[in-house]
Length: 99
Image (cartoon, rainbow, N blue to C red; front, side, top):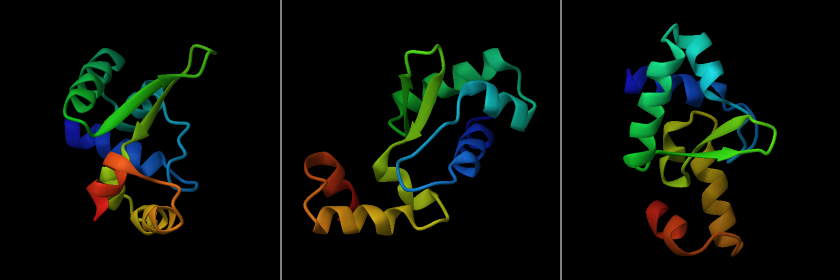
């Protein structure tokens, strides 16, 4: 189930690197996995360090792929991140995770 949910998230990331408007309901709808199970899977993915989840103050929990996993995205997100590092926009842990 983790791979299904992660792939659904990645498939839903359509804009520039780092952008997301995907939530658990989107993943449940896309995969057919019950929402309670999706939430459990997402909690595991957070613990494993693959994703972050943020509340957008409207009751909508946005799921983000962590930068060190951008290479899983087919649209060249890791290349965007490398450009940001070169420009000095990204430092610290994010920078070392892609070198």
